[in-house]
Length: 188
Image (tube, helix red, strand yellow):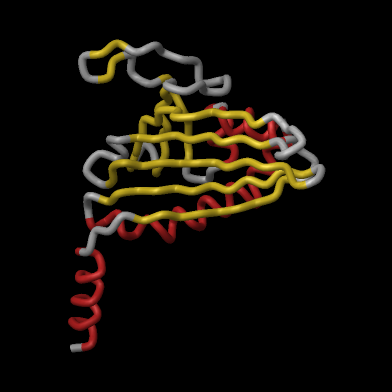
């Protein structure tokens, strides 16, 4: 009887499909805002800082009927450029999301504000059949000689299985910002 109640409770939790937002923050010692933003904007760096990311490749040359410019994935993306990220458990469970850079803005320091920047990627299609309207946003700011990065991830699940994602993404993103990003920057 207890197993049946637990199963019903689990199914009711999974049947609810609700948009979610996850945030992670880290301070990177001894790196400038520009240096950090350039590193994060360069897709070939992503697999070295995100445990679930296995690679990146150039996105398709067409979106619907519209031809788009193919961009290199080994340099910082500019607004409008796209990249396909491969993650999951390839080859058993190869998952992909095609990200479009919506903004890559560098804030130059002046008397009223410190150096900083904003980097934002969006995927309307998200992960086919599981999530859509996926967004990654990095707010980067100077803190003395160090740099603070705030990462916000927003996802609209379209399948109850996506309700398992917040916990996994929170752990993955915290590991990325607090452990793997400083290590990758040290080795770069």
